[in-house]
Amino acid sequence: MYYDLTVVQFTKMLKNLSAILEKAEAFAALKKVETSVLLNSRLSVDQFNLIRQVQISTDIAKLAVARLTGKDAPKHEDNETTLAELEARIQSVIEYLATFSEADFADTATRSVSQPRWEGKYLTGHEFAMQWAVPNVYFHVTTAYAILRHLGMDVGKKDYLGEMPYKS
Amino acid sequence: MYYDLTVVQFTKMLKNLSAILEKAEAFAALKKVETSVLLNSRLSVDQFNLIRQVQISTDIAKLAVARLTGKDAPKHEDNETTLAELEARIQSVIEYLATFSEADFADTATRSVSQPRWEGKYLTGHEFAMQWAVPNVYFHVTTAYAILRHLGMDVGKKDYLGEMPYKS
Image 1 (cartoon, one colour):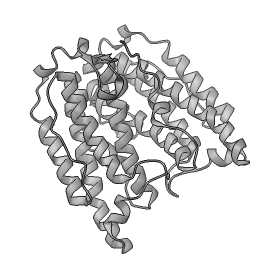
Image 2: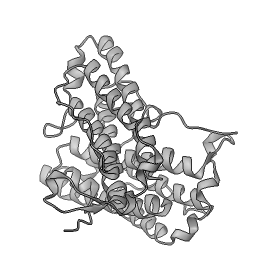
Image 3: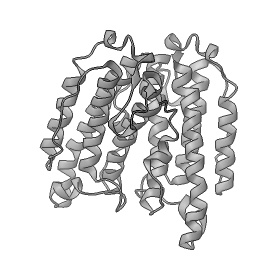
Image 4: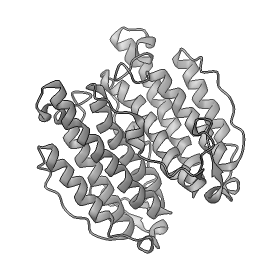
């Protein structure tokens, strides 16, 4: 279950984010502005811009899965300035997530999970997945989406949710 | 697990949303505007305003849990126009969620879940929870938060995530 909730679903959301960013290139062209204008936009003067939202989305996805399974996550230098570099970062995290399997999560529920800023405090893996990792990834992907939506880009909730495996 | 992922976590997020909305009253007073100015704000001309974001957050939470367990959800008339009415709506859904227990989710994984707009198509309960309900609730709570953040209200990600049960 933790595998589906994190690896499978984070992979899907990062693919959706990547597809949304792809649309940003055409939108910038339509508006006759540099793509960097979009990438440096933010919803509020003291909230992170689109570049940081993408960086944080991918960081939380990779670090959450690493911490829930006791593995190491790949490092990123946080030096992306272009759409292509952000797409590459997303792709690298999708590839990292693909190295996991359901079996890696056997001890997740009861594992102690901490983070550098938590000064030694910890959550159980279950609490970390439910209350921290999952809400956080959706927060930053939604915020990235919202920045582009706010700028007038033609994107809808379906782009955020992605395809559903409907049966009939 | 579905119980924790939906009932427990949706309850937490609705409480967080309620606390964020409470701050909106003081923010409106600070800015010397009617609260209705905030409630009718939106991030984009063709995106729902704050009132609708709250209505949809609560609708998805109540309907998702109802559909995952084969129960009926309470109806809301979607006629809220004030902060107090929105807070009451959130409270009513929190009370509805409190009527569920882990046992109600025994058949969730394999249950067929459909919605009126899906024209007879369906997802398994597992797919519905993971890919539809959970991302959707976080989307609308984040968007409600983002509208107020965009207007300059002093609110941070901690307000969105809520308290963590840290251990030391």
